Structures are given as C-alpha cells and as structure tokens.
Length: 43
Image 1 (cartoon, rainbow, N blue to C red):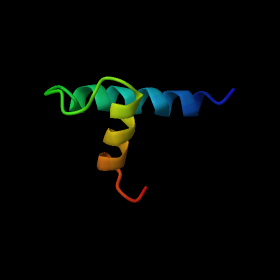
Image 2 (cartoon, rainbow, N blue to C red):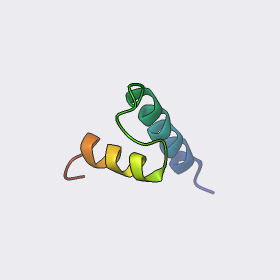
Image 3 (cartoon, rainbow, N blue to C red):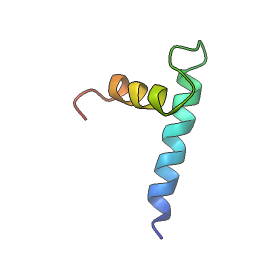
Image 4 (cartoon, rainbow, N blue to C red):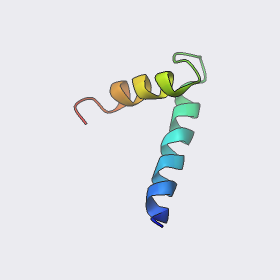
C-alpha cells in the first residue's frame, strides 16, 4: 500500500478545511474539487 499517497491526500484535505474557514466552498466533494481547481490552476 502506498502510504505516501494517503498522507498526501490527508494533507490536501486538511489544507482544504483550513482554507475553507469562511465557508467559501461547500463542505463536500464538489467544494473540494472547486478548491483544488482554484488552489492549483493548470495542475
């Protein structure tokens, strides 16, 4: 099992939760996907 991948995903989720304090994104997969698109454009 690739534990580095799991660790990276958990860090992304944690970053999403911290960045979403004002409630800019919905607290679901759609909000997470939108945050990823905004936080890492072109990536």
